[in-house]
Image 1 (tube, rainbow, N blue to C red):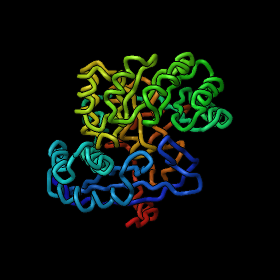
Image 2 (cartoon, rainbow, N blue to C red):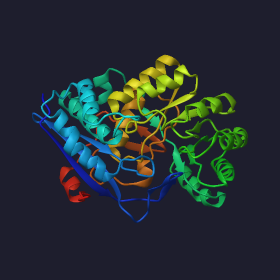
Image 3 (cartoon, one colour):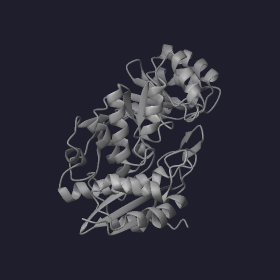
Length: 374
């Protein structure tokens, strides 16, 4: 089964509510959220993948993702066997060099996930069965709280609790009231709620330690990416001094990055994130390395629509991630292209059991939602 065609569709999805991180806006209420959907076809079979352009989080834009796939990645792998995921990864690295980072991970991830979906559909099994590992049938989700003051967060927490969520991830690094914001979340979420914070690289060692000492008494379970991704020395120092576990996200673009942090004894928790790591092929390698090295695993997403949501659920299920994960797409955007898809109830997602990703895509709706970004 050889890859015959790769198509990209930049779709404008409805935005449910606004969402910001330390780098800027991720979603803006009233403004469509752009996602790049990819369809890979091979000898009568097909699969779908997704990329989430968020310039506030990374350097890839909707325009760059579309042109990278259309002009570089697709020509590099058309005609190759669809099953040769390792060979596809090598071809991607030749087409778009890794450089200091992995090199266009969002674009590569969309194609890689689409190939996984294609292979699962062709075999008639969900991804976990294809991989031979499916340790969980459900994954608990965290409700995202993003506010600049304590007064802003009460309504968000109440909404999450009303929908059955019992875990909350708080975005920090956005202002001087971070500690007060987290205190307000704990107050309104209750002592029984799981709680962790994510700075998206927003602190220095000193400011991170100052906040962490206040967070320890609030039962915060992890401090996600407090420092810039490439500040390895700072992260090692922080890990030695921080009273709560330090979790790495943006620092782990490639499995080799995790290997470096393990050798330097500079990581408590590794965050698995499909798009950041260039897709499921490299994400599985990163998760296996963490597992073999005794590094705890947490899960996260990139405000994905339902295709990306399903890909992450299969990955986290395969590695038995048993802590609540940040897969927040449903909280902020809609996926009108999806027919039968992921079921979420009371803050818990069921891992799909249909072939491939387990998301049925209405291609006509995709075409209707498509916009020209070039």
